[in-house]
Length: 244
Image (tube, rainbow, N blue to C red):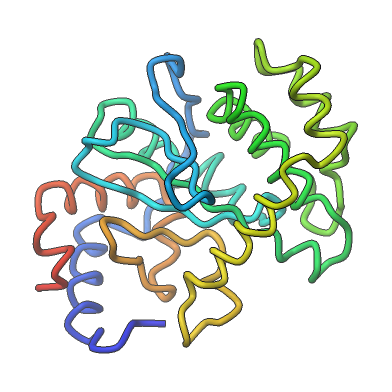
C-alpha cells in the first residue's frame, strides 16, 4: 500500500516506471555475480541485514525475501536481480537482504528457516553471494519443503570453499536460529502499521523509498528494473523526496 501522503509519491513512481518500460520481461536468465571476491559482504549494524557491495555507492537497494517464495525466485533468476548485480559490481549500488521465513508457518515445514540459517552461515565463510544465488537457482516448489538440511549441504558443494566443519555444523545445528527469528521480526516491522505481517516478498526499498506493492511487477522484469535503477541513479533527490 502507498504510504501516508503518497499521492504525489505514487505519481512519481508511476512516471519512473513508465520510463522504465515495465511491461517488458527479460528473455534471458540472470548472469551470476562475476569476481565475487572483490565484493565486500557483511552483517549490517542492525544485525539482520546482509550487505553486499561498496558502502559508498550512490544507491542502496534493500530487499526483503523469503527463500521459499516463488516470486523471489523469479526476481533472482529471470527478473531484476541481474540489473542489481550489475549495479553492485560497478559500485553504483549496494544490495541489502533481510530474510523472512513466514512461509514455513503458512505452508508447514521449516525450509525457509533452515535456508536463512544456512545463508547466515555462508556469510560467516565469506560465501554469501555465491550461496544465495545457488539456493535460488535450485529453489524447490513453494509447497515442497525442499530446503532440508541434506539439500542445503549438497547445494553448498556448488560453492567453492564453502563446505567445511564450521559451515556444516552451523547448518546441522541451526546455529543462527536467533538470526532467523530476528530477521523475520525485522521483515514484519518493515510493513509498518498498515502491513503488520510484513510488506510481502519480494519487496524493495531504494534509498529509503519502497516500491509500492501495486508496482511490484517491476521487480520481475529485468529490463524494467534496470531502467528504474538508472532513472533513480540520475534523479536520486527526486526519488528520495517523492517529487514528480
